Structures are given as C-alpha cells and as structure tokens.
Amino acid sequence: MLGLLGLDAWAEEVYRAMLSHRGKGVAELADVLGRPEQDIRSALDRLHELSLVRSSQEALHAVSPELGMEILLAQQQAELAAQQQRVEASRAAAAQLIAQFAEHSESAQQPNVEHLTGIEQIREKLGMLTHRVRGEVMTLAPNGAHTPESLRAARPLDTELLDRGVRMRTVYLDSVRNSRDTVAYAEWLAERGGQVRTVPSLPVRMVIVDRETAVIPVRADAACEAAVVLTGQGTLTALCALFDSIWACGVDLTKAQQRDESGLSAQEREVLNSLYRGMTDDSIAKRLGVSPRTARRVANDMMERLGARSRFQAGALAVQNGWLPSVVTP
Image (cartoon, rainbow, N blue to C red; front, top):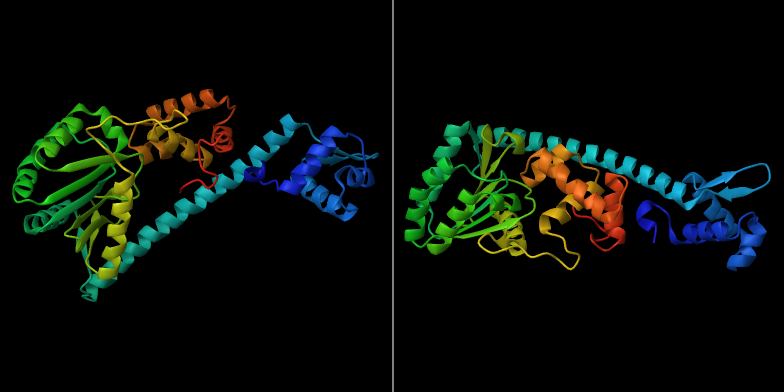
C-alpha cells in the first residue's frame, strides 16, 4: 500500500506490527509475524533508513503514523524535485543537441535536415510546404488560444487547403476551450471538413505535411527563433506515430468534455499528475497553456477535494485513491 512512498510490503508489515505491539523486541515480533529474526532485522534496517523507527536505550520504537507519513512524503517530494531538475536539465541538453546537430547537418548539406533561423524563414517554409501539400496536414499546437487576428489571417490558407480536399487535423490544449474565438474557428473548420481535438498537455509544437516533412522548433520556449525541417523516413515514422497516439487520446473541440469515473476532467487529472511530479505553478501553467493563477486555483481545488495538506500529498493521495495510475506519465 505504501510502496509508492518507498516502503516495501515486508517493511510496511513490520512497521504495522510495531504500531500494534508497541515495546516488543525482535524475537517477539518474529513470533507475531511468523518470520525469522533476520527478516525482522532487515525490515528494521529499512525502517530506520526511512526514519520510521527510532531507537532508545530500552528498545526500538515506531514513530506515529501521522509523523511517519509526513516523513515519507517529504522524502518522496525531495526525490521528485531532484528528478524534475534532472528532467529539465536533460530537456535543455536535448534542445542544445538538436540545435548543434541541425547546424552541423546544414553545413554538411545532409538531405534530411534543414535549419531555419528567424520567424520569417520559418513562415516562408511553412507557407511553401502548405501550398504544396497533396493530402494531409497534422499540427500539434501547444501555445493555447489564438488571437482573433491570427485566426482571421489563417482563414484564406485553410479555406484553400480544405477546398482542395486536404485533410487537416490539429491538436490544441484543453485550455483553448475557454476561448470563444478559437472554438468558433474550430466549428468553422469542422463545417468544411477540418478536424480539431484537444488534450491536457502537448510535448512539442509540430507541423507534419503529407507524412513526409516535419517542422519542429529547436527550443520549445522560443519557437520563433529557430526550427528544423526533418524529412528522414525513420524520423517521420516516429513523429507520425507520436501525432497519431496523441490524436487518438484527444476530444473533439466542438464536443463537451466528459469527466471520468472519479469526476475529474482531463485537465484536472493532468494537474494532479504535475503535482505528484513536484512541478511548480509556473511549470504547470506552461504545460497546460493557462495562467499561473489558473494553475494555482485548479491545484488548490484538487488539494481541497482530496483533503491534502500539501501539493505533493495531493498527488500521492490521487494515486492511492485510484485517480492516477501507479506509474505517472512524464
């Protein structure tokens, strides 16, 4: 039951026995549990490492469940915070590697990678690709709702593509459902054959044309500065599979979202996922495409529903209650 907090089943059994039979020594606990004394000692070593057992001159004592759970939660939160820092560092290193590889590929004139610098080059390339498209455009758009001006500017090209019978599929964040203009635009697209779905979070901004060419920013936080154009068959197969898996999980933007058996929306579930991973309000806001204030409000609502005293405890309780899977998604 407490395995998610770093306590294995045998150590937990010994801990519970110590709470129920306070003051008993190793031999007595071995009799109660019907296990060799060596097994008891191994469990006690683990409990001592986790600070769930304390020693005095007379004997070992299990700390109270209230204090014990706080200790375990604090340790787990510290581990997750460290893991989050490693993930962010890895993400930055991966972005740097992509940029260096793209620059090297451009200088070496490799055919499968093209490097674009600046918003004008990116727009020009996207315009050329979409005008030449034969069958399909697939887009992941993680930056939240569009402005009315940008939606108006997109209509002529979208109209041209749809009139030519091009299949257009776009995945936005769930947060765009709060934008009347974006929802209205999705309805306009649907009337002409376009398809728009939403998901709680997206891994990257990406445009794939005819399953043959993909355009991806070099840096997620600076999409207008530089991008790479990828055409390698193996790379495109993987990127198309990524899009298709995300699309399969999406909900049509023109339809109301359904809550799951726990009464959670997809966005609320994503917030709990993020809390369990130790993410900050700013990080959650960027992930969901909402303001930090909104992220904080949803997080506080989840804590209140779960009766949690800390943000991390809310994520842990969500797992224990079956609101989140035992393996939380990255």
